[in-house]
Image 1 (tube, rainbow, N blue to C red):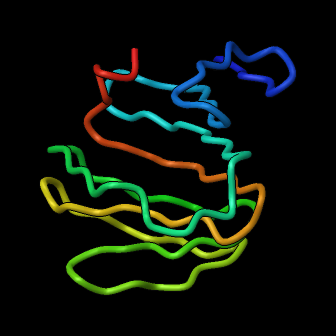
Image 2 (cartoon, rainbow, N blue to C red):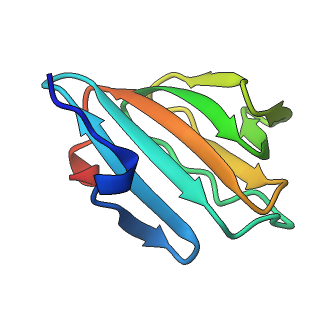
Length: 110
């Protein structure tokens, strides 16, 4: 059983002030995304993907935007996204950590 230690993980810069590291099996992927560029005035542009997603807000506060609604979430909250549904987040605090889980794995993250 592989162990991914945060202190030893290979972190990928996905945008200025945003990094990600991964764990995966053949059919499941988790991505820890650290945002250090908040708060932001507007939500990120919406995006979608065919993967089912569950996300855990591990630190900070966000507005989760989906299907024309905005949901205020804080550390300890979860949200789900079916495949092919546009969604985005807006950072409400300087630092936010999301733990995203996807099935199937996101080949585009590798």
